[in-house]
Image (tube, rainbow, N blue to C red; front, side, top):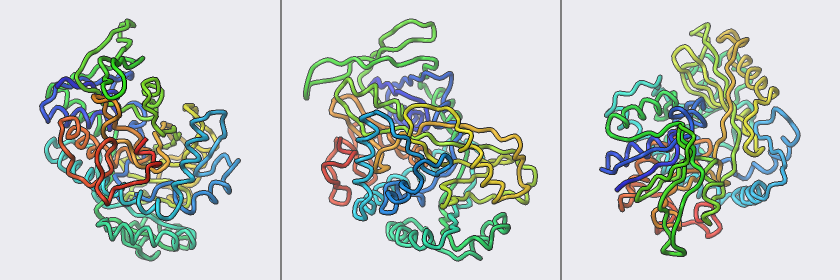
Length: 438
């Protein structure tokens, strides 16, 4: 078949890679001049099956209330006169029950573990170098209650096959000696040795080059304006996509199947078609520092749970990312939030980096209330979804690309996950109100 993939972040590029391997003729449409220029450009770098506990969990509502109005809060909710934001917030609160949280963790672990294994296979097949480390991911806690609250989730993940081991403070520092300076504040942690880290931008751009060599056609500097459909109800289908090409001219591109992988920007394009996605942009921040003292900088990828920050080492660079701002599609850097990242990083690793010249960045994470992405069929027969991966796009990217290639090809993916538009197994069955069924 001829397949058009909309978007070339990690999700779109992985989709194109696996669709090509499945024998399809693939075109990728991207408004930027290259792959991985937006949300996949400078994230935290973690491939973290262990980071499966969704933002929506029983402790979230109280935390959000505590953080309201604080410019440097880990989660900043700016109320806007937008129905989508308010509706999303109501769905988010609904997902905060213990039963839904446990169910969502199972889903996230399943697709994340499948994706990690798929990433390892792609790395072996292609030999791509993306500053990856296979030293695991270490969560550390500086609040006793936060640590105690993490224990049930860690146990659930172990029960699901993710080896997230809860450990004491001394073991935390043994695994990552760069945390020695705050040993007196650490109350515990958990460590997942099978998790990884790496530069998603380097990986995605490298995979795009390999895909292009294999025959995928990337149309960069090409903006999607609308999807063209014919028919109604069960007979509706997409016949083409209208774009503005690099010469500034409108053009209609045709295909047999279309894969939507445009993250937060999937929502406005699909709404006119009657495909309503419960996705809201969550503005995430990152800072990249030049390492000046290699011995003082961490080499194990870290999650600072209290501050909702992740830390990854890319050679002589340190990437620190996190926080979330729900404020529409704006991407302006908030100085207070940027400074909070540097302040905390300096506290953790004094003297390790050049903190006077950080490179700040922000990107819009496509958040579903449950943190479960849309992967599968839409109600339009030849329109497929691969979007809404939130903070875990890098973690889920390769597996999502492999799964959507199977679905487009008429096969059931080899992972127990609640794919949209497909019959669910008992272990993946969700309430009818769950966003993944919208």
